[in-house]
Length: 99
Image 1 (tube, rainbow, N blue to C red):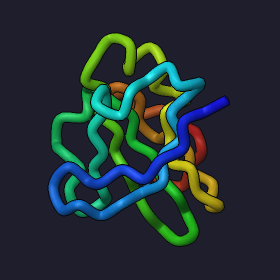
Image 2: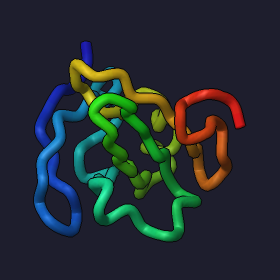
Image 3: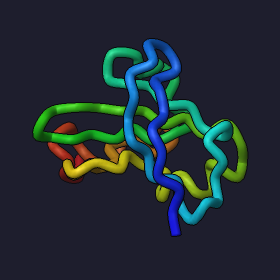
């Protein structure tokens, strides 16, 4: 089972439905940033990209536990999201493919 809940952007409050893996991560262990407020320092989280409609979200891991479950803590939407950065390292280009 997974924890599915709406969480706000840390800056503006815009909400996104989130999937937190197996109830392993508590909501207070992560911070969420919408595309307009993605921080410059992304070394402690995942940058997720959706192509259609084009949206980005950054999920910051605040604890070691959240880092361990970062891959399973992702947007829970009908659109497909791909991780394009993991802890500051580019893993896919802006179209979702390999760099």
